[in-house]
Image (cartoon, rainbow, N blue to C red; front, side, top):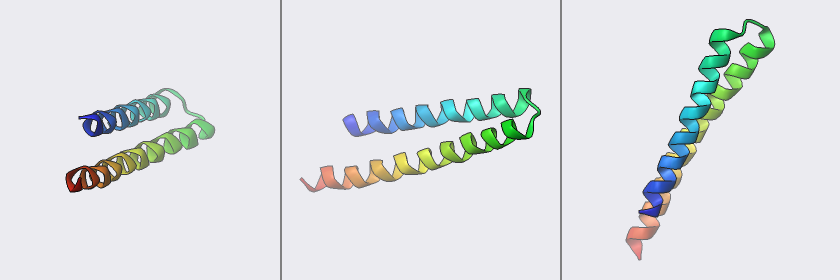
Length: 65
């Protein structure tokens, strides 16, 4: 159960970062804020990939024991 809870925490953090990215993109028009929005977007996607891959690695380790 802890593995699933950790995955949900990663997904919740990634969703929050995605929301920040959308907010910055929508309400600010400067080039700096567009770059910041892109950074948050890429960070969000990479956090999702990391969280899901970590979930499956630990799931295999748990099932082996």
